[in-house]
Image (cartoon, rainbow, N blue to C red):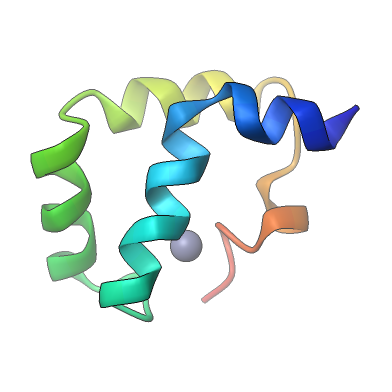
Length: 61
Ligand SMILES: [Zn+2]
């Protein structure tokens, strides 16, 4: 279930793709993210109401 949800949300996919270039959550990471999906924060907030992102490593620091 969480697996299909993972692929249905572009934010999660792009977030992970950005980690190929930048391996942390530094400001430059979010800058890169923003150039691809300017509304990433909206998508992330939506996701957080549905699923814990920790399972895909998106909230780890
Ligand atoms: Zn991440």
